Image (cartoon, rainbow, N blue to C red):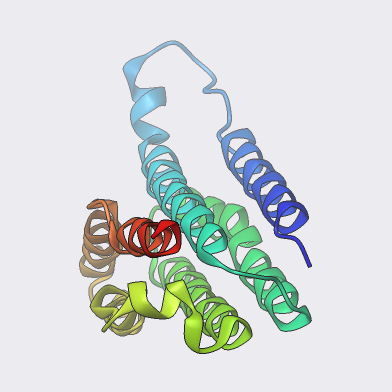
Length: 198
């Protein structure tokens, strides 16, 4: 099965997610600086979620590009990932509107946690489908960021009820950790292409 439809559908869903998130930003009533300050939690929540969606879009592109083929399990695990990502607009708006209160902050972390687990499952399905020759299997290696992220999300969820600003700090730290360009898949693809050309 080809990868083009899977990638096109996923790109469309991610574009809609970003659109919904930006539409949740309400136009301020009034022209004073106070009206913008009151919107700051919603805007910061939007920026954080936009960065996360961008990270997933970028990594998903490389992930699908590295896949040799697409199976039914890959399609379903991809839908599972898109489901959790589709909850970003809700959790983002709820957390921002309620000024990072404990429960909305914890729910936001839970959505991040489930998206991370879903991404990991998608990786595993692609590697299982491609078998021993999987380029992705060679590229992933120890995947320390992929293993550390869910642990940090669970820590942040727990901290949400004690000190919710610490949870926000963890969410930002994980996003910054993933913003550092990860060239593993690109290098593995280039290496695989070089061996094929020889």
